[in-house]
Structures are given as C-alpha cells and as structure tokens.
Image (cartoon, rainbow, N blue to C red):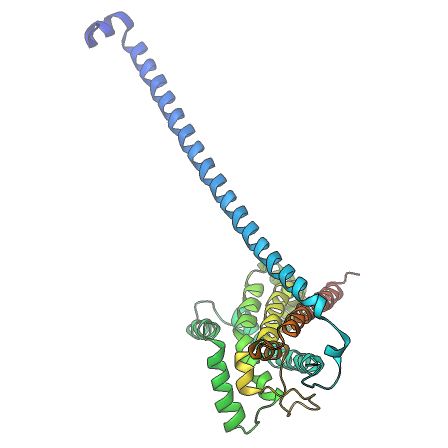
Length: 314
C-alpha cells in the first residue's frame, strides 16, 4: 500500500491536485443530483396531493348535486309553483319571490358600500395605515361570526329598535351586513393585484384619480369583484338561521318589503323539520340550485358586457 510520500513520488503534486479536484467535482455533482431528485419527488408529491384534493372536492360536489337531483326532480309538480301556499300544495312560489326580493335588496345595500370601502382602502390609503389594519381586522372578525349571531343582532336592532318588525327589509339589512366582509376583501384584493402600469399609463394620459379608478382599474378588477358578489349571492340564498329571526317564516306572498316572508332555505328547513314533506323539501333544493346557477350566469354575462364596453371591446 502506497503512503502519501510514495504517492507524491509516483504521481507528483500536480497529478494529486487534479485527482482531488475531480473527486470533489464528482461528489458535488452526485449531491446536486440527489438534491434535484429529492426536489422533483417533493414537487411530484405536491402535484399528486393537489390533484387528489381536487378530485375529492369535485367528486363530493357531484355526489351532492346528483343526490339532490335524483331525489328532487321526480317530486317537482305544478302544484309546487302555485301563487298561494296551502298545506296541501306546500307551494314554494311565495318563497321564490321572497328570495329574489332578498337577493336584489341585499346586494343593492352591500355591494356599493363594500366596493367603495375597498376602493378607499386600496387606492387612497397606505397599506400599512393603521385605519386600514383596523378595517381588515373588523372584516375578518365579521366573516367569522356565526349567522345566528347576525340574526339575533338583526332582531334586536332592526326588528325591535328600528321598529321594522319581521319583514323582508329587516332580513335584507341583516344579510347585507353578513356578506359585506366578503365583498370588501375580494374587491380590495382585486384592486391590489392590478399592475401599477395601468395607473401610471392613465396618469400619463392626463386622467385624474377618480377617472383612473372607475374607467381603467374597475373594468380590470370586475371579474374578481364578481367572484365576491357571486359568493355573497349564494350565501344570501342559502341563509336560514338569521332570516328566521328577522324576516319570519310567513308562507304568504309578500306585496312589499315591509311584510314578513320566508326564503327558499327557510321554506326547505320548515318542510324537512315537519317530517311530512321531505319530497317537497328535495324539490325545493333543486329549485335553489337552479336559481343559483341562473343568477350566477346572468351576473357573469352582465359583468363581462360592462367590462368589454369599458375597455372598448365588442
């Protein structure tokens, strides 16, 4: 076995240095390959977990939808759509009209307030402003409050203190507060995600702050704002606990927003709770799904038309 001195005599100092360098490079390349393989395995694992989560979510959605359709479509009949509710037909038409009143009025109250709040926070205040942090904390807190707490607040404030009684207006005011955090945060993120180049280009052309916000930024942010509006619409349609306290559960057809009524979700809850009209409750669930899909499609279509018109597209 050659010792270090004998190795130097046979190979020389230069050959030893080059051999050590080659060994170092080989070891470094092996470590890099191991690190690369490990990173690829982690990336593939994350992709597979993401695909699995997406498949589970989509499969759960399909199972729920198909189960409701199978149980509900066969129970749809003309008597469920009569204008007057009786214990024989358990018509959902008054509830459908009340739900449309509720959605339109709730969004008319919440969307302007939420949108202008988001514009003020994103475009006129610094992100590190203490006031902005307080509003964000308040919106996050409001979004985590259970709906029944909103119902109790609406009953005490709108029904009794403001003397609006159990009415569609009391319910709309309550649900507008419930969906306000979603609209504020989605609208704020929509404006914050817009590139600064849009603002700089608009200012360079001589546009002011207000014109830049409403003519340049708003059409670009509209799809993201629309996502918050659609989520809010779905929550209003599916809400029941808060509306029982504020809007009541009257089965009569309301003729004004100052009269009580019941939404489709409350109607379905009452039918299923009685245990005598489970088939009609499933039919009501089918109608709720259909209304949500139709309203979402209409909202998306109108928003796209408005955005294309604002951007000068056909």
